[in-house]
Image 1 (cartoon, helix red, strand yellow):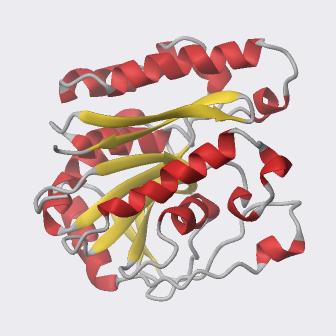
Image 2 (cartoon, one colour; image 1 turned 90 degrees about the horizontal axis):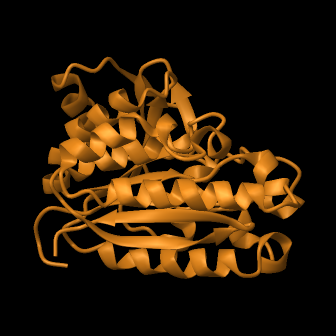
Image 3 (cartoon, helix red, strand yellow; image 1 turned 60 degrees about the vertical axis):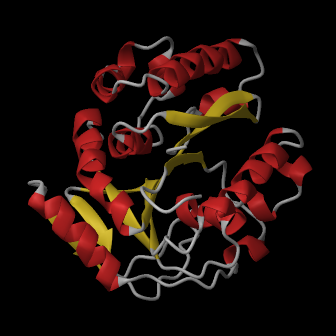
Length: 273
């Protein structure tokens, strides 16, 4: 990739510690495909990249909050998995310097910003990024969602973060474009149809080259086909809003499209050619 504005990426992070489980324990078709796509994201780690900023579905606070932990541990925030999945190790560093840059940027755009010094990186961060960047040489900083989950608020957060793309910070949103646990466990075809129709709408919205129109569409996501059936609560969709806001005028350049546990999911990359 040539020097210049870095891309913005949204990744579906999958379920629990899938990356270290046998494929047949989760999904022998969908997860290998996701692993292959995530592994390809290493191409974006060029000498221009100073840090990765991750917005995960699994961290919500009253105000947007930045993890200032210089040596973050892994937060095993999943339940009922084999013992070995609770002793995983990933040699990563945080950066108070980069966290301060993010803090100043958000504060300059009118956001109340809090700091966090103790929290580890949740599985929405370390699971997919261990696949994408198994030996990270740059710091990783996590940014929380705001607990209101308001789409316009998160789009504006993304818009405020746009300049960081010119400062060597790779912005990644991590969530799921389908997240209904009852739907994942359903045996009929209705849930699959719901996921397909909502995913079709979402890809079309994210493909809109006009950032204003794209963000207006996303703000009214609940009016999309089967939206509430796909997201009874929208925390896993909300990182999409941040991604779209940070994308700005950059057009959608790549869509990951497959199924996980039978449900259609997508990932998005906004990158200048």
